[in-house]
Length: 98
Image (cartoon, rainbow, N blue to C red; front, side):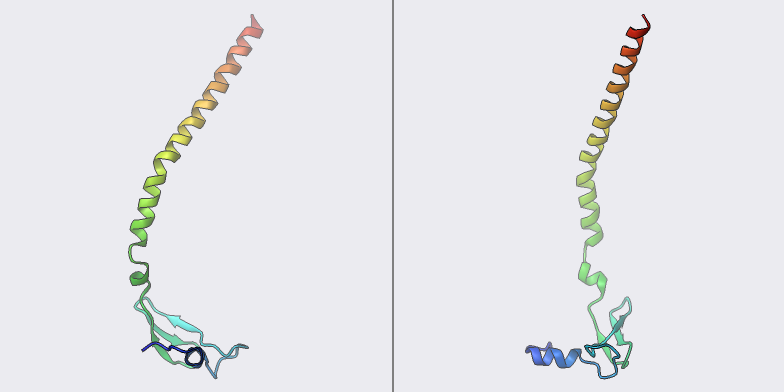
């Protein structure tokens, strides 16, 4: 059952063995969500990261896919400008040699 009041949450967060100024727990959490305080060895369960993030990889891939066409179009436009500048410089150089 989660702590409701500020006092209850502060009591849960305090670690008398902690060398820190705030006397707070330092949780070491494994991939499955089992945590243990580095200082007092108290154990606590945390929601696993893969459950919290959920579809992070899918959302990230979707965002990259949505960005890719505009990125490719930008690159194509940049190469077009470079080629136009090169062609213009070549044409000017040919005019000067005539």
